[in-house]
Image (cartoon, rainbow over all chains, first blue to last red; front, side):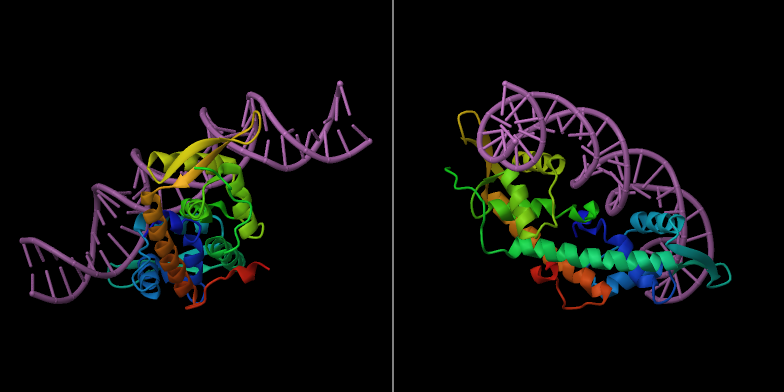
Amino acid sequence: MDSQLLAGTLEMLVLQIVSPQPSYGYAITQEVLQRSRGYLELKEGSLYPALHRMEREGLLESYWVEAGPKRRRKYYRVTAKGLAVLEAKQSEWKRFSAAVNGVMGATGVVGTADALA
Amino acid sequence: MDSQLLAGTLEMLVLQIVSPQPSYGYAITQEVLQRSRGYLELKEGSLYPALHRMEREGLLESYWVEAGPKRRRKYYRVTAKGLAVLEAKQSEWKRFSAAVNGVMGATGVVGTADALA
DNA sequence: CTCTATGCCTAGAATGCCTACATATTAGCC
DNA sequence: GGCTAATATGTAGGCATTCTAGGCATAGAG
């Protein structure tokens, strides 16, 4: 996995996961891992700062849930603003991937070099 | 355009453009712009450092061509190593976009150039 | 007891795109 | 002639984001 590719999609993936129902950090990594058939491994060093950033920006809200006598999980729920951002990022992703595929699949070559080697 | 999305695909796009025949910086930006129907605007501050980096890494070779009495163009030609990297990045991109679409719930659906229309 | 999995977190390094600028030629326009 | 835009390459510093590598703690399996 080229980590550079993940830049710009991480927030979208997180918003997508938590939009139907709240979830917590560790569960998000597992969910993404499953849905991508083991391909997308979110690292904690990327995910947790992203979650905190998104909460600061008002895209997410968090609350603690006791999952045992001394085990706690920090759940994240998407806000209205977060939902709007999710939809924007979905459109952006579609346009971007279509644009990249357009460049990678274009057959007609225009304006390239008639160069001499 | 979310510039973060471009990270990791810029090199692939450049290799793709110059792989059939050599080209030069300015022409590459115009070619990408055309093929993506105006969506992907490569900035000079991104492209030129990338070209230099890729030449340093042995993915590209360059040579000057006179395009007028006092105008010169620096053409880039892909190397064998660059071709191998291009193929690797193509596979990587397919896997990555499929994985993202898998998480987003659009399994099997890939963005096509028509989506730009 | 030890190892793995679960669960949260941060500091600093590394990466790589962008803004803004610098420099210069060429062509169209009035 | 003078003005503007397009063509053409390049660098410096800023900025955002990921990763590495750790810390801390509970729980279950062998």
